Image 1: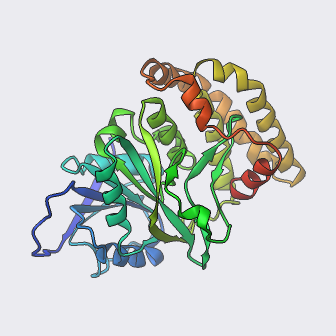
Image 2: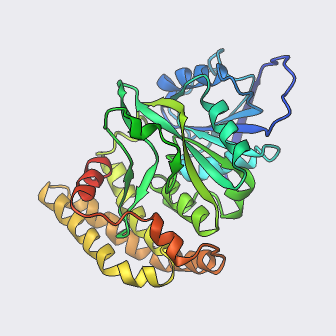
Image 3: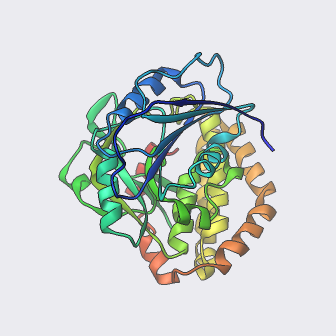
Length: 347
């Protein structure tokens, strides 16, 4: 049981709620008060009404006395006694939003365009069979370039952000199925989020959104990109960047766990040699870069956690609704160029 210190900050908007699905927003903050102010201001300017906003603070250093005045009308600030990780914090936020049909996960370094939530909700109302939606994120430093248009998952178990660093182009403006949305700006049906178990708290952070997307697909629910929903994203504002030891450790440990838990049936055994080879190659890359100790620790801890992940696998696969062929079609199977893209985005 975690001790919660809760400071509830509210403001009355005086505007009647529209007859539409209620959406709650969750922001997980850890030492990112410098960008949180801009994030909340962007949410306050959303065209779509927000039922409630939950800011979960993972025991940040030197928290301010109050949240910025420019914030959504009904904003609750929950300060945790310790850093429980991105996954656990979001799950705590979802538990506070049981009266919402849809849950938007927004990183504190993501700044939504005024119509971003409206575009996501309109897509949700048009496509009730879809379990989650992702927005197009643009690099905050250079909005002419993509931060990402969702996550890709390779048959070997490697994953990366689609379009990361690529100039904004017509291809990114197409509505499409995606393997999973980036949890920096994602909209989930709350009942489905909870039905598949939410974000895996053992992951702590990194790859947890890919793992959740995989479980939603296995349960028979689609994930889609909404290209008209846009946001700026700084990226890794709290973890020291994607190249930090922290990100490297969690990302590469969780790659193994995502594959073991989710790769279904015969595909697990068919692609296991490729998965092992991918892990060996990436470890060798970082040994050559002088960072082998971090990768070796990540892979060793991944192996130590396999019994726990295998128990989770049994539960996930027992409830699988999607066929092997449909999952196979979702997986990226390219070589060479695709691996280079993954290296740039994840490795």
